[in-house]
Image 1 (cartoon, rainbow, N blue to C red):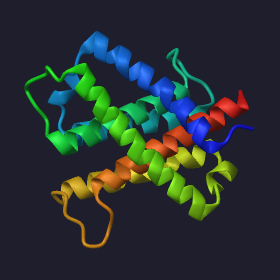
Image 2 (cartoon, rainbow, N blue to C red):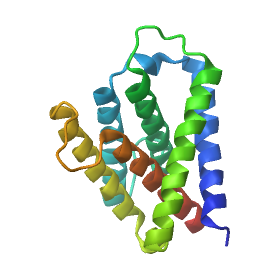
Image 3 (cartoon, rainbow, N blue to C red):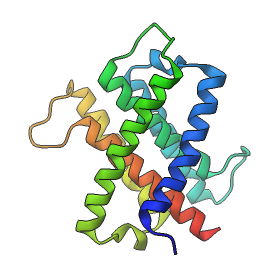
Length: 180
């Protein structure tokens, strides 16, 4: 069995390749989106995963793996937007976008490694459907924080929730790969 760090890197490599290809196809059109719009896009992806898990079938020729990849990539985009703000200038250089991608994935991986140490890799005993539910919970938390204009009394900020969603989606991709 591969170790978690290697499996994380393998899953993220696939996500990054898709991000790069979409940057080639669409450029940085996502820069026009506010973080609340990215949150809603993530919510749609997570709801579709849950729907497919419950129904056991899809009428669209895309499974849940592509949706978990989308959750990783849209979460990175949201983190970029939190840092840079949305922009009508859609000419974000691909190298700059990819450097942000690398930075946020490294941050998520560091968080994952710290939590994995403390939680003793408990995620390995979880179901993919539980990871889906945790992503939905994080999204609902983000929506509430956004509705509160970003203010929290005691809770983590929006960025921490996006980082957690990256990790939950990567865990789901690892579990799906292991089950294949």
